[in-house]
Image 1 (cartoon, each protein chain N blue to C red):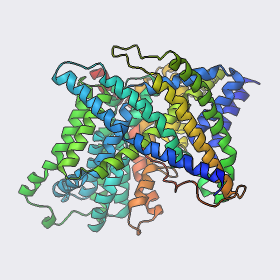
Image 2: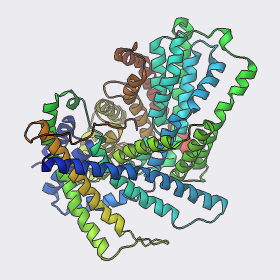
Image 3: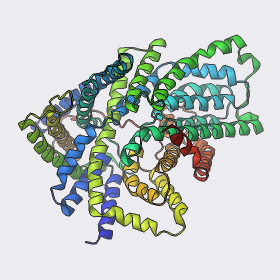
Length: 183
Length: 436
């Protein structure tokens, strides 16, 4: 197995694992908000940290979903023409359009890093009544962008293999599960 | 380069890359970043990255994973089958009764969950085989499930309404309140259509033989099925409209209700939680990442000055304000053929809503029209979600053509409802005015 192939498989597995764990964050978010309502209405005493902690978990939840969705082809797209193409043509189109992915995620990575750097350098906190540190969450922005970028590269490698431009000895991406439809 | 040309190029590029199948998030993000670079320079990206941070901190957005999670759980509990049994006993004796009852259950589901998929999937697996077995016309049966599935987004709570409120800056509570009467109007119109049609042509939806209608004792016992769903509706909607909880907190109450009802039906296990968490993660992640990219899009769009350009163009249209409203609805309807609802909202609402307000219309009322329009989009080809949901679960004897043809009369009824709400805006604006 060549190096690129191993890289693509490794990244895909990593993002899949991270996503599988992050998906469960919805449970503590739910529990915290339920606790908040409970504390306020039955004990008459709101806690300062429940809502804010739920909000921070949601931030991490949202950020970490990006790469996971890319692994499973879960980002919404228009499939009318694309889905009708033969596999090789589809791979060629995907290679061409991936430029926009790299432009957007690249910009996010670059400017996300500078925001994260400013925040981490002064160990920024939220300045609320509870005042938790928020620099780890800001640091997660460039990390999440990097994970999406790496997954974009893995997808690019898979597409180039499908086109025969790279040697392919094994499948690097799992079977696509498609989008979760119906908002 | 002139503003007109730049605007055309911008929307042209969006459309081009969308049709090539690149996910919406990267189309919006990528095209906008390139345009931002050439119009405002790289400094503009700072705004984009910092707006991403404020999206993550939106308390309203936090309601979305919870409403989705709730729907994913309710879809797998036995709530729907006990409701269907109750409805069968009470309505089976009426011509078309099973179809009317199915629409009613869909409405109840709409009042419990914020997304449309749950009702279509559950009713498609439970009500459809049962109706076909009892000699209902297949188009009548398919169509009522398809149409009923759309209630999820019009009857509050509704994830689409939350997103609409987020994009236009309106209040979520007001939109929720505004959806109630139009939702009931649709329920009455659709049930009315089924009742009249089956009265005239009994072979489409024959009444059940008396042996199947059950005794009064059975009927009264079956009413238990409604208790738990009603409790969830009261907890979620009641707490929002009564001002006791924010929509986000109400969503958490709803999740608790859904878990309890799963436990009562003995379906609550780790497999259910795992499946629901994973699907919630995917749907929520998809929405939030599109919103991340949407900041780049709106910065680019406003930075170019395209917003003013389009506003001026539209205000110059002949035919006056009403022609504009109808034109907007047509554009939305056409876009619904290729694009998902969030994409349509992000691209059209920043353009349309300021114009609507400038023309003196109520943005909440426009939101309700928009959502009914989306509902029609859900059930009409080529991109209707509900069609694909149904195709995935119907027996092989039913073809895609059957499904397509089944929606025609129901889509016409919904267009009629839209017209009624346009002529009588009070249907949408009365409750928000009363409650808030």
